[in-house]
Length: 145
Ligand SMILES: Nc1ncnc2c1ncn2[C@@H]1O[C@H](COP(=O)(O)OP(=O)(O)OP(=O)(O)O)[C@@H](O)[C@H]1O
Ligand SMILES: [Mg+2]
Image (spheres, rainbow, N blue to C red):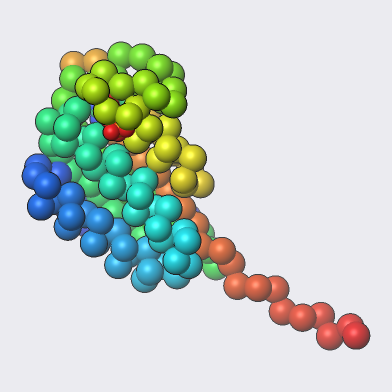
């Protein structure tokens, strides 16, 4: 698997969140994701960027286009240097919020993508990485009637 040089976008304001959504949409379309997959990825990215801003005090996202044989994918890492998450399992529970939200951002994001990983150190910060792969080309017809 190879990754093309990644692109880094800041997450420090609402305007940055809008820019992240736009770039993720462009990148997802560029990699060949269908509309449903694009929308799922943008929704997940939007929640994770907002968490980095609201809970993590800001940070950045790194976009990397991936190639694995004929497969094309997109990897997004949301990085902040905020307080971190002490109990990751609890944070990933539907409805858990420490900040009067709905508590559905993290758990929802996990369900919307193919690969999800969360690395957090209390006092150091949080990195959430999500990866999606485009559906391969349909297999050619075998020619049998
Ligand atoms: N980047 C982060 N840094 C520190 N804590 C985080 C981070 N992301 C999530 N959390 C913690 O996990 C909890 C759950 O996150 P989640 O996104 O599911 O809910 P929320 O942000 O509180 O509400 P919303 O449904 O509006 O997103 C947060 O309330 C917060 O305590
Ligand atoms: Mg949230």
